[in-house]
Image (tube, rainbow, N blue to C red; front, side, top):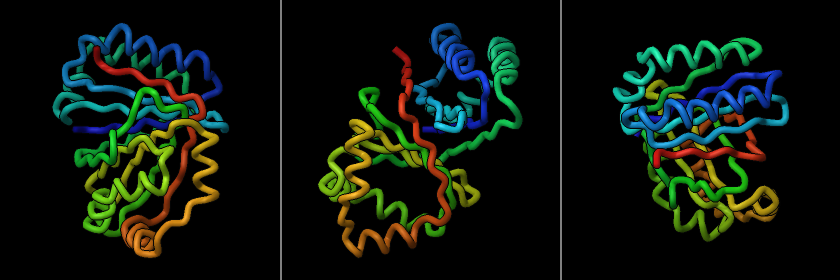
Length: 198
């Protein structure tokens, strides 16, 4: 799997979401290798899109198409400034990996201190689910240069916040997490939008 996370601030929330939906309905059905998309707005107006393809080659072929270029030319106008692209070839999943039934999604971008420790941590998904049953699943994409993008799906935001407050993480798991990842920025998608190829 290949993941691309796209992020930028917008003053046009309704228009940018409409344009995103246009891609799903008009371009998505013909986009070879497209698996699905998760998107949403944060409280500060950052529009985050996480797109999944079956390979980088499929994603790049889509990017080169004339229809994609024309669509992006309109999409780009709806951002206020620079747009960040985060490409990840190495993808790991936890539990279900994600779900279109999630009521709340948290996207994390950060640095990886120890890839091996992160891989080991992802293997303990049963323990994580026991500690945080509101977590449906997650995907973690590594960009090969020390960065990662994680998308975590929750049943709902209230349960996620409650879990954050009450979580009693075992010291061993906490130590693994601290060894695995460094600085992290969180993007909360209160009303996530999902799309997948039929």
